[in-house]
Length: 327
Image (tube, rainbow, N blue to C red):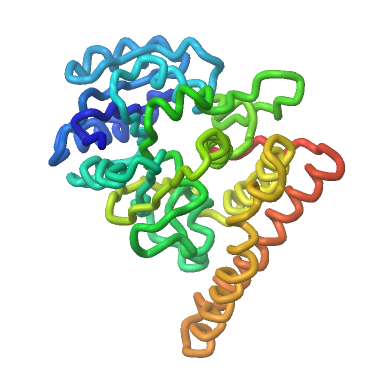
């Protein structure tokens, strides 16, 4: 059973405008109750940021990604260099709580567990938007209503807070980088490539790993927590609509690779059970005198419609999604 001390933590970064976030992330990793074997900072095709990071983080190993631009390629560069029997991933704009890695590592006490993920709590840069329903917190990269409240098996964790056995990553070939004729288009934010495609790479990886290892288990451990910064630009209705639409496009791409059965299993449950309960709760809040409840109910409907539109258009026509999704 691997421990936190056998884990490599991979942090991918690409933009100097996120420098303060990166510093906070690395500081949080140095305060872990169970320190990792090593921390690798992967700089995605940014020589100036690479040089700055090499100077600023002597305790970490800073490397340049030689793989295709984007988060999947950068994570694969970290996997290639990792020495640990576990590889843990955290985003450069997230801050780990002190027991984060220790709690993730305990998920691997059973040999059938191939990977685990933890909770991502929003760290709002501005006021928390009253209209945003918690069922849609995935839009801002955070844990959402519908995930287990205690340790339990899941189809896949969220890539910004997860750990995977290194052997399983190697056997699966790492994250899908979108190479080949059927690769989806590149998504950009502020002129920077988000990924060479918009197939949800954490979902895709988890399903491919599970197919290679019959009986494999992925766990969600909500006690393994990180704070994920949510900038003001993400707490807007425009971003909500674009991101929801892109998710639909991404799910359509995912089903082309792995089929709708596994690719949409969690989404069907969310749509059939979690979202209707959230809608009813929001209406009760409205009737109880909270006007935000009405906004959240409306946002649930609009979010489902936007996601479904992206999925439908990408499925029947192969139409490209919009290019405004942020990393």
